[in-house]
Image 1 (spheres, rainbow, N blue to C red):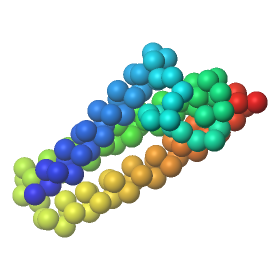
Image 2 (image 1 turned 60 degrees about the vertical axis):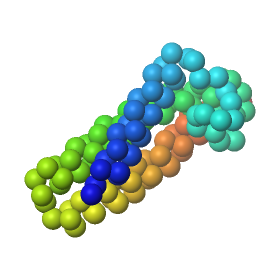
Image 3 (image 1 turned 90 degrees about the horizontal axis):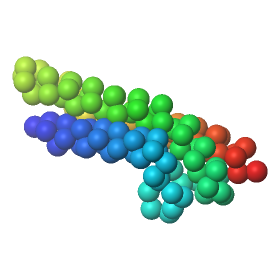
Image 4 (image 1 turned 135 degrees about the horizontal axis):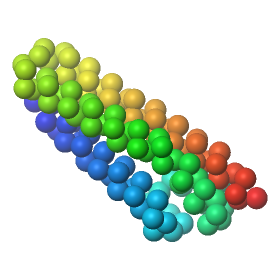
Length: 117
């Protein structure tokens, strides 16, 4: 019953881990398709790199949180916990991750501002 959100959390965690690795290796050039795109990060290559490097800790945190929620939903499935517990975990996890991604964007934007000037 909670397999779709569980799989979603795991896919999301993998995407975050891959993104962190690509950022660390400097293989993510400034572009309009992939990455944290804001007015500040798009101003220059230096601003792009600075913003993305500042986002690494938050992206890593998001991947850990997503794995944690996936494991919690696995526990709901495995131990036949009440459906309400799974519902709360499924929704609250995505709301938390959405909030953290807003924070990622703000952090990257703030870090890119001095590099863009």
